[in-house]
Amino acid sequence: MAVDVLLRRDLPNLAPTGCGPLTPPLSSSIKPLRQQVFEAIRAAGSIARVDVARKVGISPGSVTAITSELIDTGLIRETGSPQRDAESGRGRPPVALSVRPGARFVAGIKLSSPSHSAVIVDFAGNRIGEASAPRAHARHSTADILTETADMLDAALRAARLGRDDLAAVGLGVPGFVDADRGRIQWSPIMADTDVPLAEMVAERIGKPVSVDNDANLLTMAELWFGAGRALPDFAVVTIEHGVGMGLVVNHEIYRGAGGMGMELGHTKVHLDGALCRCGQRGCLEAYVADYALVREASTALNWTSAEREPQIILESLFSHAKAGNAAARSIFHRAGRFLALGLANVVTLFDPGLIILSGARMRYDYLYARDVLAEMTSLSPATHAKGPRVETHAWGDMIWAQGAAALALAAVTDDLLGAQATGK
Image (cartoon, rainbow, N blue to C red):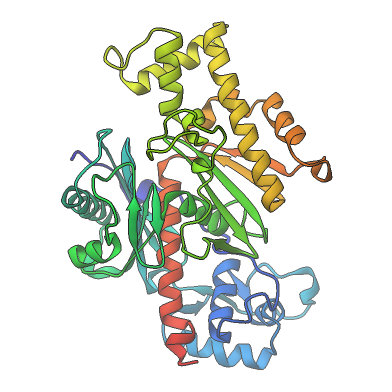
């Protein structure tokens, strides 16, 4: 597997102002106080003790005691003077606190059909190494998936000039039906096997703790930890790539459902006995919106066959023809856009999010989110949602998905170090 590596010296610092959800005071009261204090410091990036006390809602004395312990354990450090909040008052500038980046390192890996990607992230949320590799559009055996995952991890570690012994944990994103709580892949379009205990198997292969989740949830984690959702209590992310996925944040946390496999927007039904979906059922939303649906439509309407052209080339040709005014090509995008509007209207009706983020490689195809598509989403929503939510489009590259997987690992390591189980509460 040929791997492209970007060395850490070429990477920007992606977390200069902190990372993690920006939660209001007392919203994380179920967590131990020292975890709340640590997460407030990491979210701010650099913050004075007095401001930590205000953000967490505890006394300055308690903050002093907790931060002293965190400094002693090497998780945080004193730095220069922070940017003070307006209400912090005047006087001698306080000493700032920040997370020690080198306290822990984690990896995030995203597995997908066109390519795999991996990043290494330090404990402050900075991305310090990354790697990517192309992948054939086929379902691979579990043994091959394990080898590909280990290869991606080692390539990213080389980019960061670290070894496996330096890692605390790994987060792994996989498309399909993922039982995150048990670390099992029930079904995935990239895997030949079903009901695979992938987290356990990868952990045994690489010798590190592994958390696994649906890739759309991990893109949502990236928005929650590093992007537009940091300060929002509730928002939805809809991904449009080789499939259609969704992640939902409720009260600053990912919502996964009772069995850990909720929010499968792409497999909600929009047409009884409709088009065949790659999951084996008919009428799923992604069977009308995802790239393979567009390729199928183009092959029929424009007499293009995948035997003559690669699917990606068909997609690019379809978009070029639509831009040039080809009526058949435009009608394909228009039909897909209408089905997407129906799916988004259902999201609005069920969850009433303040923000919907449309993300993924297909966001380049602006016909899918044109003004008339969003207008139809509003018209299909109940009258009580006449204004509709704010909709943003984020055409992130592959690395942001892997960074969301790294956020999953950061959260797991933080819980292990500072959570209720670690403190014996």
